[in-house]
Image (tube, rainbow, N blue to C red):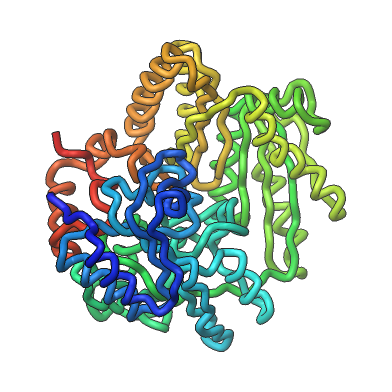
Length: 465
């Protein structure tokens, strides 16, 4: 696709479509909007800050007319380069689309613009005794629009589902500049195709989301926190399968492996047994009346071969102490290596131990340190390859290791990404997971929504040779 350069006339026409006088044209001003947390970067030619749906529609329509590439951007917390404007053009920032349009506790929903942060949604809902299911680690900073673009979830997904499971409807602008309204304000509805779930996770390649109807859930009355230590990952993985097979579903089920425990022990004051080979952090929530029974059910399922220690927190201080191990992990990783390649693969829970064992073999084969942690309840493993980016030979080994990692994940009937998305980082591997016929159909869908390929072009799909 050949795109139109932004002439002064086009810049003036685009700028005139935004009520706010805030637009960025100088290179130094546009520079921060050219990257995300992947550290990939490309300079946009123009950054616009619309505040309402009508402005977004007018901008996209003009970009469609003149074949100008347009990249929608939230807060830039993504890790795959999905919001990097690789063809320059226009970056459409949602920073001024921060209205909480309606909180409707009677119908258990909240309507927001995409620039509202996840934390702001949680705070607005909490006033009425509710919460929104998705809770990514970056909740205080990431925007709802970004959560929708990536289908980001977080630890609570094990019980409350991913973003797709917690959105009722959307308003969006297609690549042709047409207004799309999909979904309903009700929890049931089967009129028409489910474009809501299609747009969520599409990384801004099909449309620019301008409003979202989010499904709310009542806040639980109480919560209990447990830490369970096993002598190896196989024992921990077996326990995860047992926990997920009984009726009490935890609201968080996190794990860290032996290598991660070693790093935490070395760089923090966390009290961990010397024979700790894997660690689970478990939380259950629900009515006060049944919480003790829920804890007993989890404790019973967690028991088994390889159990080293089961700890139930009784006070806020004890809860903080248990989570201190997990919170010490990221700082420990930063001290061990100047860079990490962070992947968020997913395998069926029953294959977790096999994946971790395979990762250990790959680490030894390629002489790369690999540390694993993540959301054990749904098999979403954050695989961290610790590398020195200034060592070309080590980076070559790391990418060879990564290639075989993805092959292992797919062999175990897994998927390449649970919540980080594809963006630019995983494009070369998508064809391994999705067959040619399916990819062709996906590209046809893209052409229907965006015939000039202006919306976040050359993302998600394998690049043409």
